[in-house]
Image 1 (cartoon, rainbow, N blue to C red):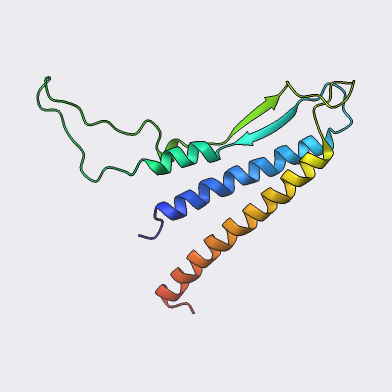
Image 2 (tube, helix red, strand yellow; image 1 turned 120 degrees about the vertical axis):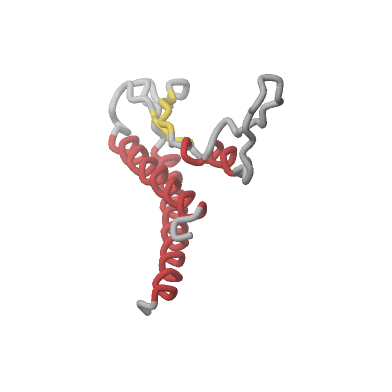
Length: 136
């Protein structure tokens, strides 16, 4: 397949990492803003849950009301989306600002490394497609 499950996972991950990058940048920009609540992006756990439920190759159809339904996963890859959370439970200063610049810079560095790894994986995938279609 041209765009298989792996490509879809990489695409979802890139979108979430891009959002996380913007949220971290906002946190850093507001490091001196009183009452600013730190925000963070979560998506990894939801992605793991969706990936752990392999898609069913055979769908079951109920032809009688007393048949036992075949359960489908609660969350699918299509439904995975990053969520932005406000952390209002942690303050580092008296002005109730929840941003610790050292934590944000570490998160930024970690996010950049993840983003780079995912873009390289996606690049290799498309390089293989280039070879297959004969462009290289």
